[in-house]
Image 1 (cartoon, one colour):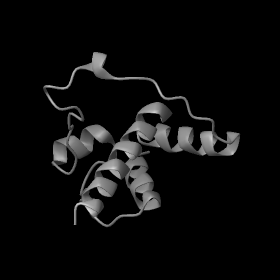
Image 2: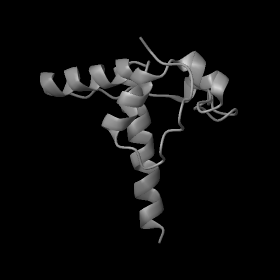
Image 3: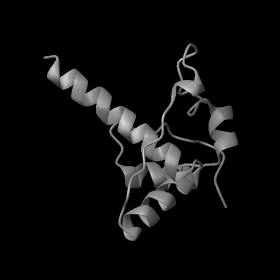
Image 4: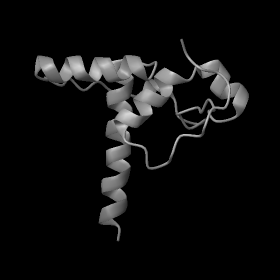
Length: 99
């Protein structure tokens, strides 16, 4: 059973395993009530969904299974998690190249 009292904030330097353990230990509703989690809109308000395009990726089945497992633990799906990771990496690469 998930604990709901005395929820510590997640460290900004937490590893993926630490994030997974933290989210599995503390209930989302309780985290929201305690103020240690928040719901964040991932899209820019002006961004329109019809401006998206499709990209097909072939992954080894073990990689897909791991991605799906991580996504479930983060209460999302594999496609969304992969899209977020790609967006984060693109921002990082573009930032690094502008130095």
